[in-house]
Length: 346
Ligand SMILES: Nc1nc2c(c(=O)[nH]1)N[C@H]1C(S)=C(S)[C@@H](COP(=O)(O)O)O[C@H]1N2
Ligand SMILES: [Mo]
Image (tube, rainbow, N blue to C red; front, side, top):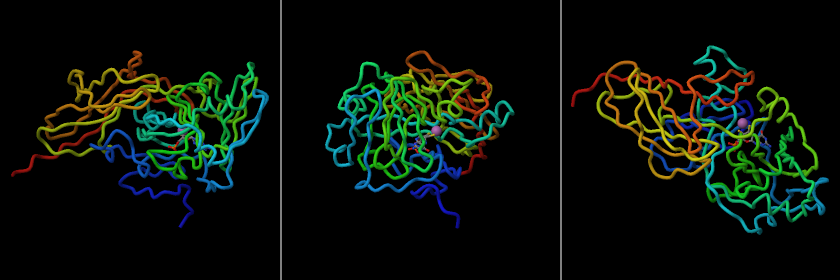
């Protein structure tokens, strides 16, 4: 059997297997709670999940942008005042497969549908607290977060975002220690930003007075050479792709999200019918998601249901997404294929 790249079990009823990456199946979220359980959360690795021992781990805070470099261990990190926030992490490549489906242009890379996202309650120490403890120089500009995986995946973060109150060095996910696949002992949480900003297995924070570069803000996770930052607006149905439904009255459910705010509205369209408003249900946190639903009388045959969301800052989903070489940021409206079987008697 080939050696697995991910530690946790990823049963095929919960995940689509992309090798290094494991995509959450949207049908597995049907009628579940607001957050995604750790066992069900998507995994995106640029290599294999490293096994790091907490007792041998430390986080070094270094660089010309601070006056007092130091390192702290796992117990020291956990002893600091922590906050808990509910936020999404979403891969910049989420939706990539739809460039081929809607534009006929296949892009190399993980062929995500829309399951490269999850929402969890993250507990950790504000990055700001850790940087201030190192006496931030007035000239500090950038923080390079470095991972302890084989490739030492790293990405620089501008100081402004590093100091945001919900940018955290996270050590717990949904009330449990971070699972190995999600960055144990500690990871960065950068709410609203592309998944790659949320560096897992964090071992070093390098604070610089200049802008910094890494592979992951110059060659990868860029569009037209510009590093990707905020995620955009998307919506998905909690149905298999393609879906098979029974004829008759029913309810269709889904979730919508934005990296730039909370969701203001969701609309849906069945086949060529007019767009109609869906009902938003329950919590609707910024940089997380909201659940939505609508009633639908399913009739026998092949259908396509489209959903589109608008966030509280007026960002909406376009009908067509400008093509980009690496297939990032696909936020376009997609036709979800639905086959309705004949109504059964009794
Ligand atoms: N050190 C490190 N951090 C990383 C990665 C990685 O491969 N190595 N993958 C990034 C990418 S591309 C994404 S989308 C998120 C995924 O987080 P998750 O696996 O916890 O869902 O982690 C990011 N952080
Ligand atoms: Mo990603």
